[in-house]
Amino acid sequence: MRSTLHEGGQIMTSAPAARREFRAAAKLCLPLALLGSTFIATSVAQQSSADPMQLTLEQAISLALKQNHSVRLRSLSVEQMQSKKDEARSNYLPQIKTSGSVLHVTELEGVAIPAGAFGSSPSTGPVPSKPLFIDQGSATWYIGGVGLEQPLTQLFRIHQANVAAKQDLLVAKTQLDQTQDAIALQVRQLFYNILINQQKLKASQDQLASAQIRDEENRSDVARGNALEISALQSKATILEAQQESLTLRLQGNDLRRQLADILGLPVNTPVDLDPGAAPVALDVPTRADAIRIALEHNQDIRAARQTLVKARAGLAAAKDAYIPDVTALSRYSYQSGVPFLVHNFGTFGFSLSYDIFDGGRREAKVREAQSEVRSAEVALDKVQSEIDIQVQGIYDRVDELRQMVDVAGQVVKVRTEAARLADRQFEQTATLSSVRNQSHADLASATASLVEASCGLSLAEADLKRALGQMPQ
Image (cartoon, rainbow, N blue to C red; front, side, top):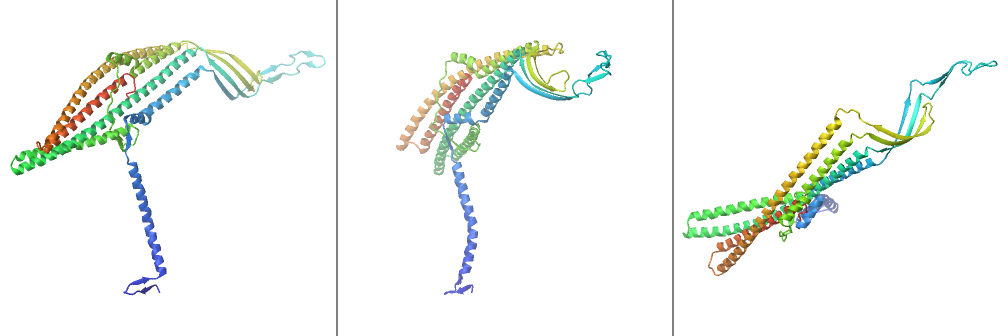
């Protein structure tokens, strides 16, 4: 009997049926439990991965110099140029080569001995008694050996090729330094821009709060008949403008953080939380005259132009060395089988000479081309030096101007701070409205944002000056 009637009309299930129902319920609940645990684990992982990365300015620059894609590509280029330099240096050393061949000839030369060539004897007759033909060697030749070759006069061109390869390596290292300096400057710029954005967003929110309080006061005055309706409309427009500015600043901040994550070599959606106490620090920069002198000596662009000039001169020398005959010292140990009149094992040594008597003007054209490259490199060097001089002068003008802006912005902050203090005191004494008090604090926040922006601009200008001097802007 599967079920029984319990007191009160309830149906009691038998023990086997209850076990079957329990197993069915377990089969249904077990996948749900597994799905729930997976969802919880995924949520916890997402929450842990969403934790923002805490970064200071020094940490951000160090991370960018290690992981930035442009820096890594330049590092690979340096390794490539180092390999090419090692390849050019190997041409100084003698070359040891081995070679072998199997040859089959269609016809062999032999030695013909006519009858009686060695005389005639009364007892034997002519010697030999009939013509003889003696083959030399065999139709299939086996030749192999090991040889050593040392270039002699070619060393002039090899030396110039090594000079050019060395300059290519130095240019690659200079370009790596340029990329690192540029990345460090960009990281500093994005870092400061994010801090400026945060300060402006805070000031915008304070302006929004002040506008909302003023709107409430205007609507109250309009309701009491103490103000016109247009004052309420103007306050509403001010609120909308403040909301629009806050939204714009928020979007700019998100875009700046994505750019910073990308330049750090991180996924663009990586949340980054910058050190709020990272204030812009004034960098130690030399005087204007010393800066111009240091830049003309150590600027990365000038260094690259000078290295390119040295490479061009090496190319010109190599083009002129092409008129020298190629003289090579050589020695070889060989084995042969099947070659006539040669022992199986033998050695050879000596010199080989090669010279192009007529090449259709190719060497002369190479010399003219190399001379043009040298002149172009000289003009490029002069051009870069002039540009760096102008660049340093312009950066110094900007630094002087920004220093004045920082002083003015600092004075404005002092005035706004005093105004906010007086507004707080008057509000406590009920001598002013709440909107006036909030507006004074909003003005202080805006003045603080302007000071931060000016200070960051000065620090960026000084960092740009250090980059122009060939130094790391950090």
